[in-house]
Image (cartoon, rainbow, N blue to C red; front, side, top):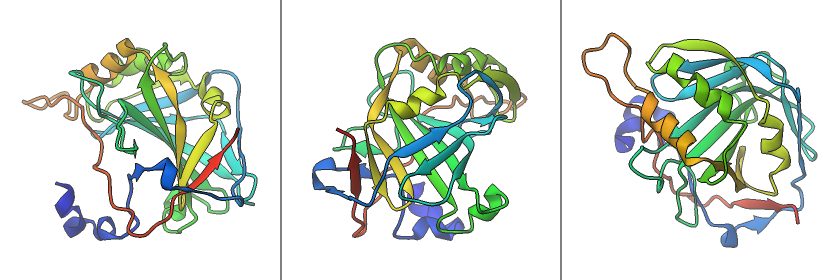
Length: 241
């Protein structure tokens, strides 16, 4: 379990761990933070969808970039993946919480700093990655997720990969963001995206942690980590009124 992760992965025993429980009323507004500028194709583009035995990962073929006005470097979208709960309820699933409340699902968009040659090189540096987390709550159908949920039967099992056309709604994920909370290089959106219940049910009922030839199939669910202590870190808040 999480209490023993540091035995095998020493970095998991550090004092700057995520996810966290975000408490907006205790966060401070940082005037040094700027707007997020997202650029990329406004049309549907190709991508790979993979079941890696932990989650589903989308790797786009097109070039998407993220830049904060106050930061000189541009970050390139490497991939994005999902954390979610189970089909019996919608009270948990996200990694981060807000005021002690978890959400059914969270998407992590992983960007690497363009000044490094590869994401592997970027991961070795403190400023190498920017991870943008988007929380989902049950609501109206999400058109941006539709291509992904439709492709899920092709990646039911660990190790399966398919190509598909997606990302049509990715631009909207960013321009709808009205607030964000920052803990070092981890960014978590304060506003949520909608998620239709049937879409959530598709995600939590069709995937498996296990491979197609394993004797005992284990359904993929509850693939989120527990929240971690802040250990003295301050949470900075940026809000667009």
